[in-house]
Length: 279
Image 1 (tube, rainbow, N blue to C red):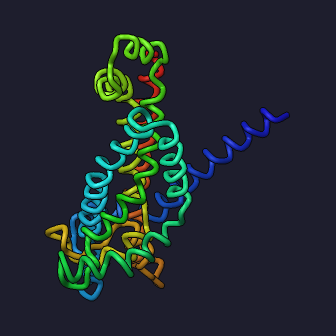
Image 2: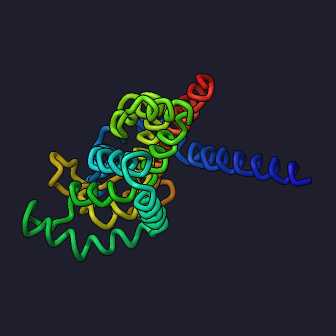
Image 3: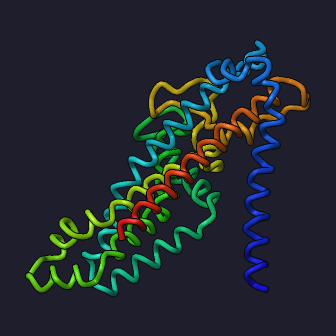
């Protein structure tokens, strides 16, 4: 009986996922039939001039996500090294508890704290202006995606076979040597999966970019410029005319995010599948 319930739940989840995609495709289909989809992808956002391009949002999403990944990756790898190998057991448990606690903090709390602590610092010491820009949002987003990446990294480093680790200890290898020459080469599939998952998490976040990126509709030229992401754009655009281009542009954003998420999931399955075959 329980197996049938789980199968039904899996079927329902898959059906809802497909239904969401079909809904966005149907509502955004006029963009494809009229040949306006690619014009929206490459155009500017100026509703007053009947321009509804989302290219600035594409640039903003890419900049925020890549910068967040670049900031978060060294910290996440270092934390994973400490948890998996380098630290004494009591410290490992304390760090793991901290990471789990961070993963449970609501996103809005990160943004709320950053507005009162990080934004004034960025405005007065580093970037000038309002302090709401791509760099500010990416720093907080790096903190947000770190727990997800750390979980993947630690899992990969700790899944190395015990006999190999014992062999390194028997040969007099130090923890750093065990980490560099045994665990890292063996854990690369999980590390790669963690990086991809972190990028997907950064790309799909809404609140951090909405609260901290500045929401400028101009394409950012540098990290200190204000910008708007695709997710923030969907949250901000209010279109009363369901047949208008402003409304249809929202579904163009949704389709892009959906395709990106699908690519992330397929890459994860491919990497995890290959690692399982090698075991």
